[in-house]
Length: 369
Ligand code: TRP
Image (cartoon, rainbow, N blue to C red; front, side):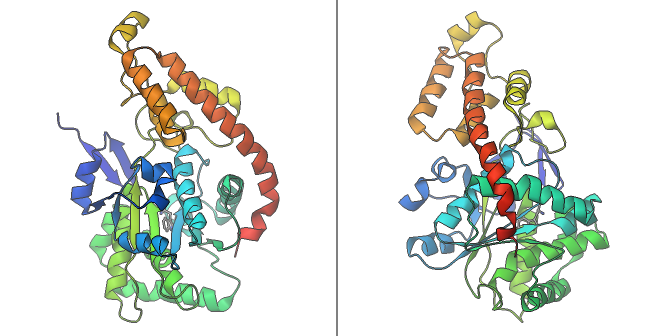
């Protein structure tokens, strides 16, 4: 059966065939990685399924050489468990000695979504940065900045905006179309600004020439391609080509895309325990059979069961995950029981996370550069 699907920065829909994406985008499938990586379940379970030029980062980690990680957040809606997958990656890189650069895309939210800078600042701090800190982000070797305000150090700020302005000469209309599906002055600016986000860590005012990895969902690849093309065309700067990795999307509760605009498709890290229970029980797509008798006889399908799929992202214990998988397939474990396991897992995590958020709120300023 042929499924139609779309993966672009402005639209993700349908049942995604990730191996087809690898071919279409020209990515490399993620190879087996050295032991340093397998402590992270996203690498161990191939949730991070593809890359561009990741060899440089593997080498830097293996030989403890300097490298940086760059990522950005769109400050709209709530911080949900799909976003936590990216946060887990940058915490891993911080652990491995990387310098972290995190951009709040407030200019993009203004130009592409019509949201004010004040609103973006409020959401970024309340939802995203507070949760990052609660998840374990440390202020050493980490710069969080707003696109509208790179730095209070004018040398750094000038270097950043100079780069952005010079990159403009080297872009084409087709590239912007690939990034935003349309061409408007505001969106073109955002595309170039995002390229500057990804490349500026290598400027002498920042880290100098170190390899930089940008972990993203595959929908962001047009941004990566644009930034890589600009990096190779501009002669005034000698950039080491950007590295990127691509992670699988955590499916939305209904089995389709998780979307910030549909609160019933996600669990936010600020949801309370009752909300979690109701959402999972009511909306999580089940891979179980219609009746208990049939389920006992034929077993459920973990591949489409959203509660199980979420566990593959959040249950650290491989043996326990396999047990749940096998019991579900054999019919021993019912759909409601699978959901109960997920609810318990999420709620015990959220309880401690939410307590840590209260502490984290007081520390936001340590992270803004
Ligand atoms: N465009 C990204 C989004 O929609 C946000 C972003 C801005 C970003 N700058 C970045 C992502 C740099 C990765 C790297 O979520």
